[in-house]
Length: 208
Image (tube, rainbow, N blue to C red; front, side):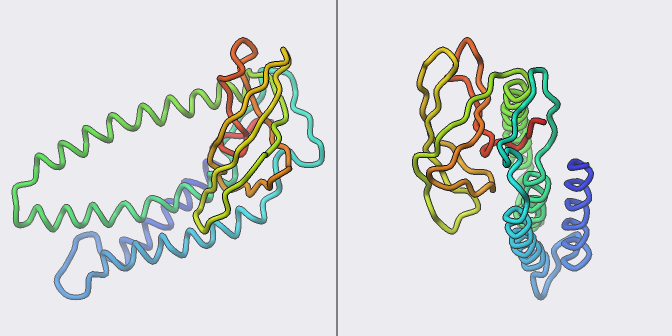
């Protein structure tokens, strides 16, 4: 369901951007710039409001089952990730304009190479999340502190104790959950190496 919502929102945002802003840059008012920017802005506002209204998956003293657990895309990721897509149309249009006047094929190849390098890293990170959420041990981390800025994501400092008594601390980005200082957040970790862990509020994926 979450994947379907993410796909539908992506199609909606890109469709509005291309319909109102145009597929190719034209002379006159640069709607190709203003429309995707406006769509991304309003979509981010909607995603922020929706994220704030979504319940915490670990609320009401929820207990996670034994591994392997069922994992899926989080609702917050489903409404927040599509916001990034219309904004990507702006640099694409800029590059299209420059290519009308300059030979920039090498830039296209460079960007394609960078994308091919970044995508596997993102995939590996999500694979690690899935592995730990599905098969890892669970502990509750205490949120020691939180940055409070106007950004989409704020960093939190946390600490948790593994089953073997090891104490692990760290800092992660809060991916729209809005956890507060003094609250507790689930952590999924490798029993043989508690330092290999993910904090639930920093993941795109959720466990049932």
